Image (cartoon, rainbow, N blue to C red; front, side, top):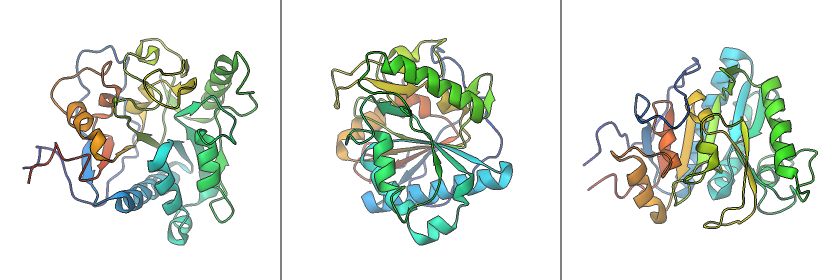
Length: 285
């Protein structure tokens, strides 16, 4: 039986032109209004195609409405499939990429050439020859990732760059599309359970110490998670059986975003893109 309010079918998604005001410090005791849409794709290839179609619709809609699309990218295996699908001729032709600005939701403090770099992944898989010609804003641009103060310096520079170029409401950047993955511990961005980034009053970009419970164990930068509720559209991609218990927990009835930061994506502006394995505990045959 399907959970009430969840839609496991593939299909289009209507994107709002209005900037939502559903954001606040995450110390609040109650959920924001509305539920995310849940789409269950048949496997990795279908997930990548669906994610790419969603991203194209969001970018084209933003350009049509406001003349520009600000997109925050994610990393990991889900991003790899998405980037490859975005390079197909029909999707390249569907977007005026000269009007797209690519940002990052989080980054590992490694050089862009390092295999763990989110910016490096985007450069290799999306922006290689034959891909879109687009403006990209790496989090570590101009910063030596090995420097002792790299995280603090890069956080300040990136926050200033966002403030100068991305529309904001009450100081929170409003992305037209926020792409996210979810870890098996329920983290999104580089906001781990009980992260300092979850505290009220944190800056737009937060340096994060190297996690000890998940790889890669390197320091990171993350956007403040209040950007999730401020975004016009959020797409969270989570596949695989290992994530099924966390998906069910996050979309369950107990609200505790400090334990499960991905619960901040349990909002009406979000779409969760799952596969049959990760959705196994949500949908009963």
